[in-house]
Length: 318
Image (cartoon, rainbow, N blue to C red; front, side, top):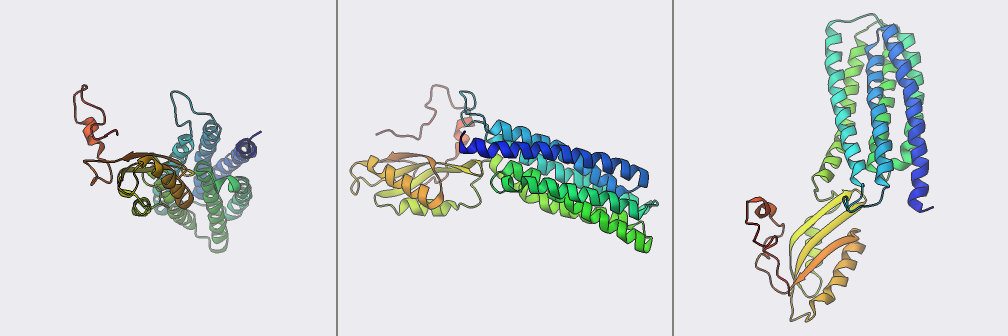
């Protein structure tokens, strides 16, 4: 068994256990919320129902991501986890919006809510949510997909805690408006917690430069290597957060380095040790007519050029 297999098996088991626990929470909160007229409980149950789909999505993506690359999918299925994280964060934001609308409506049309029952049911939900979150905590540190599922459960724990506080407030003051008011506060927490995950997963899907890497630092590092005159056609992106890719063209000073191929190993080792980029493609050139274009404009590939023209007219082989 490989290291990845040994890590994947416990995570898969934890996700499955999380699905069972979350299913119990949903059933208990929907029934309890309906019987007690608590919007807070039903909102939490609805959020948990979204989480059930998110956990299923996370489990499927986690299993899929372990599949090897194929002739059709040469990068494998690593992006499956990123897509799951993106959908999870989008669902969280969407759910927060629905809860916000319901809470505003309830503030103008309050109903009687039994605080003690609300506290009891939400307390059970809080314990279960924390248990699932703890199950996923280790995997969340290194996997964007698992982090999405973990974030769902943490947000649920916050919601359950908010409902408990709401129930206590109703018991002490009799103010049923606390129920939708707490729901509005939870909406803000959900949106605030979901936005970073949404932005990070969207950046990966758009093939943006990873946030921990600065393009100018990459360029300066390569151009500081003796024999390098210029870097251009630079692309840096992530297949998923742990797999960073880079391609670029490097113009070589043949007076300093007569054999341009000698620069390949120094460039690769420098980028690998300094930036953790281990998968890179570097084209070494002795002359170039587009050396001022640091970031290659790919629009020429879609401007209707003739099929008889070279696909990459700017490349020069030596």
